[in-house]
Image (cartoon, rainbow, N blue to C red; front, side):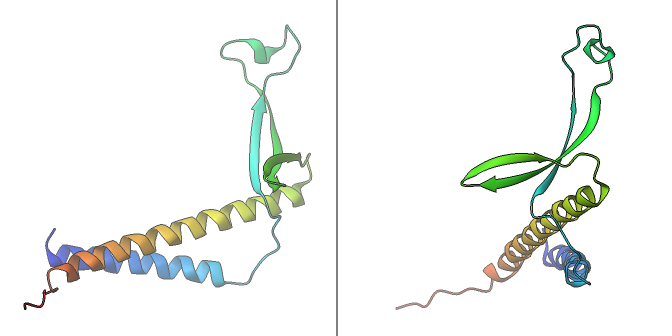
Length: 124
């Protein structure tokens, strides 16, 4: 990859990072500290439609996943729309933070590629 292509990639990543940072720094909203887990399941009834190969499973069942004493635990949220929304916000927040870290890592690698050729070793 030539230096111009590297710079174009860096500019694109910086724009994405800027948008993501603004989103993360905007007015903070309440969140439920735990990842939202959505499960569709089969029941125990032998003649239920969910037992068929192409049968639609029951759900969605919403849980929040928390780490308690080193172990992950799912807590059922029921149909409480507010709790589901709070958990969804936290899941999105975590996803955005992970993407921000990924962008920073890519920027670091690209900048290193650009500047690696400029390094000189001192002789003697």
